[in-house]
Amino acid sequence: MNELMPTPTASAGVSLVIPAFNEEPVIVETIRRARVALAAEDADLMVVDDGSTDATAAEAEKAVARVLRHPQNMGYG
Image (cartoon, rainbow, N blue to C red; front, side):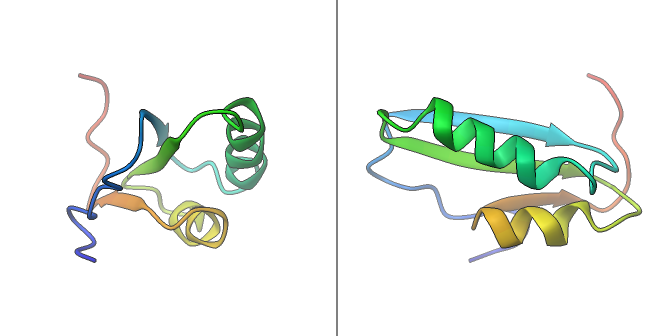
């Protein structure tokens, strides 16, 4: 899997993208709640780490396989 462009899940019917910047304390719970909310769906879950300086990406990887990382904060837009 390429860190810059993870391989999409071919069978997913719904995709959820969670943007994150320095969300280490809450990202695992956010992912857990998203999975509960989408439990009935064939969902593809992805976290976009927007250049976090904490362990947001590492924590997200523990909870979900797909994490896209920006090397620096890209901000809004």
